[in-house]
Length: 374
Ligand SMILES: [Fe+2]
Image (tube, rainbow, N blue to C red; front, side, top):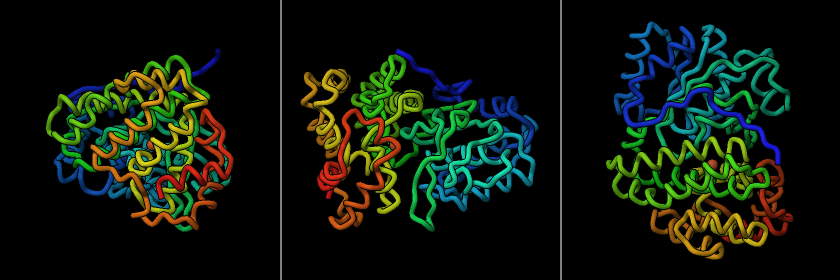
């Protein structure tokens, strides 16, 4: 067995670690590109708190605010040009997976000779190391703070895919569960189901290894026990903390072991439907698990036990029941998914995460899987 691991050099986790943001940032440089999402961070007062901590440490910053859900190339190019023009020496991203991914793209491409398009569409490899990056998640689910890829959308061409390089793993991840307390129930449910999908997919992935298995199985256990509570009683840290921990563990695990068919479908579906990523994943997960069962029975036995079940065969129905309990729709027709669109979506999902799926799927089988959520 061989595997190799890419990990953040520094991880700070726990209620209250946000107070250490200034001190950690100071170790990364003097001038930051501060990347955040639309407005939640400002409204919660947490942005002001970050700005105060940076000032106290003598760190200058340029603010890129308003990264949209599913960050666009346009937003990232703006961030990259700002980092270059202002000679930022590191990136600090605070927000959901989208803000962190935009921060990752900026950190990766700012030091390069070429522009984002060349690396995103042209397949050009990063010639230079990315800028140092401190990532601070405010939702629990994407695990972006510890993964080597940024999921970006070319809105003009309707293409959503990953910019990926092992060196894009953030240098430091600072995950404070208290930041997730203000996430509304639907965001909590969707992000949490993204984490559960990622944990299960990486556990049964063709590239799974003992390190990723240990983290992913523990994450599945934590999510099964605490995600419903985090959705129903969002102000209870006793649920928020284990869910945030599960997200962190999952990010480290799948950043090294890859994902599977659900995430293979999720990018083209996300570009076509503009539905939240976690919701798309959650709806597909029970059906993909059902399809994968014969190819990974032993692994699904482990997943079943982590979910508190007895047998691998119980996994799909239990996941469908969990979606129902969390208020996540079983179908995506409400987002405009149609029968006519299925063949093109199935064709667009041939590569990427699909290649790590434990069971290979033909185009027809992929259309069949998509039809289950129609
Ligand atoms: Fe995901």
